Length: 477
Ligand code: ADP
Image (tube, rainbow, N blue to C red; front, side):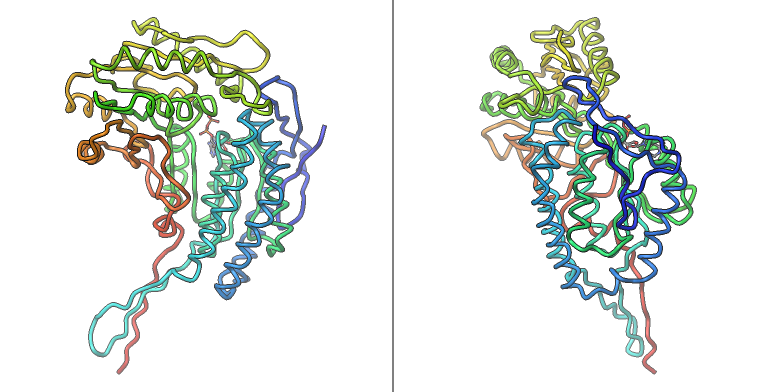
């Protein structure tokens, strides 16, 4: 069994305690590797490496075209490790091998994208008076700590790190304890690209211990978090205690509204990827469908056909559609939600329970006749469970879609683009997908309304969250 280490100051570090985190393949429950578990001494080391690199101004003062070249080199090196790293990601997370390799390539794309923006972070001149030259300068915060979730371990790391690096911050990444191995392959890419030490540090450790210690470390002055609402609120409290900014992208309970004129095959195709892909462990999962009464029966038949057709198995097997959920805890939670929906009166037209085989597999579950008062319609499940609700008029559909504490994603299925735009304007969510879930790219801003968080990742706008503004006034008299 291979043993992996923390990447601190461009060195591979074992933890002082010798404690390790053992990582399971959720398809088999077998241990596939272990990694040194960082705790206080390793976090202190990572923070001091980041601080030293930031204070040396090596990245801040680097000519911006050189910063861009370094980022493109990181992108190239990331593509070189995509196959090997993607394979480990597939084993530790359970997702399909194609999706896992793509995640590495997406990180590379993020670095290429933000590389092109390093020399476009422009300030302003502000007219104050004839004798004052007033201008703004955009400066990095300094030491940025990123807490990463287990569902997209590389994509989440890449989007925040590329932005943080492009703006000149020194970064410490804490990976999720369930999926810490794949990031070490990315760390190799950082090393191979010749990145100066201390600018990027990648550690693994438990949330309540390493994560909390890192976020509340006095020298950390910027935090990025993606994960659950409960943990996000804890992070926000810790950040508030130090009065430092925090970017948080939290959960979701996204609804797709299906109008009577929708192409139902588009809805089914979105369900394949957006609720059954990655076993539904997606923050913008299409976890509710709000369907017009006139087309609901027909759609249910199609959703059942889809569910039956999905090939169940480990992500590393050719052609699998429904892969395992991440852990036994998660499986119990997801199964519990499905059960609660059925007990509350929903009809499981497909699935509803775990699959009787090794690993943490949950049936593709479609719950019909769900109503907004049921827990399955209100709470984030993070599993392959789709709730179907019925409506009669468009206002009612929008009210149902918005009747949640979350506001991450939303969708509309209709051939009438005027109606789509009208609906998009009414949905309280950070992104709206029309006729196809997941239309975004590295260039589109991503983030939540309401309890789904604030600030935006990806796109040009995200850079603002990693920069502070300095105003300079020069007296010309
Ligand atoms: P889950 O409960 O599904 O693991 P979380 O939102 O708790 O989801 O975890 C997302 C990330 O947050 C992980 O990297 C985890 O280690 C980290 N984390 C969990 N609790 C804390 C905490 N109290 N402080 C900092 N990070 C935490």
